[in-house]
Structures are given as C-alpha cells and as structure tokens.
Image (tube, rainbow, N blue to C red; front, side, top):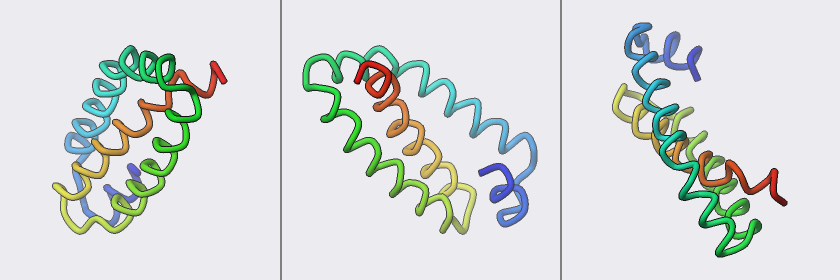
Amino acid sequence: MPLLGGSTLSLSTSSLGLVFSLMAIVNMLLVVPSSVIADRMGRKWSIVPSGILVGLTMFMIGGAHSYWMFFVGAMLHSVAASLSGPAPAAY
C-alpha cells in the first residue's frame, strides 16, 4: 500500500503517514467490539465476511485514482481487517 500510494498516486510521506496512523487508530478502537461480535455471533460469522471485505477493499485500493479513493479504501480495509482481529486466534 505505501508503494502504491507513493509511486502511483504520488502521495507525500505525511499523507501516507496520516492514512496509516488513522488505520491503526481504527484498528485499536474496533478490537473490543470485534471480539464481542465474535463471541456473540460466532467466529466464522466474524472471519468470513471480514475476509471478503478485506479482499474487496484491496481491489478498491489497487484501483484508486485519487487520494480520497485511496483514503476511503484504506479506512474500509482497516474496519474489515479489525473485525476479524481476535476471531482467528480464538477459532
């Protein structure tokens, strides 16, 4: 993702740093809710949809033509990846 943002979209280091910092914050904020979802609905119900969403967001990031499309794709990727966070370890 950093190479794509830097080379294809010509994003600066500060822009990329902002995106990845916000991704880490989203991940940190969603760890507890994702574990609650995994406990109440089951691990498979947490892993499978988040895996599909992670795959879709990778296509979105790969096809990004602007900073905002890259940013939205990265934030959706962060949400999808954090939803599966504790579930595979518990499974």
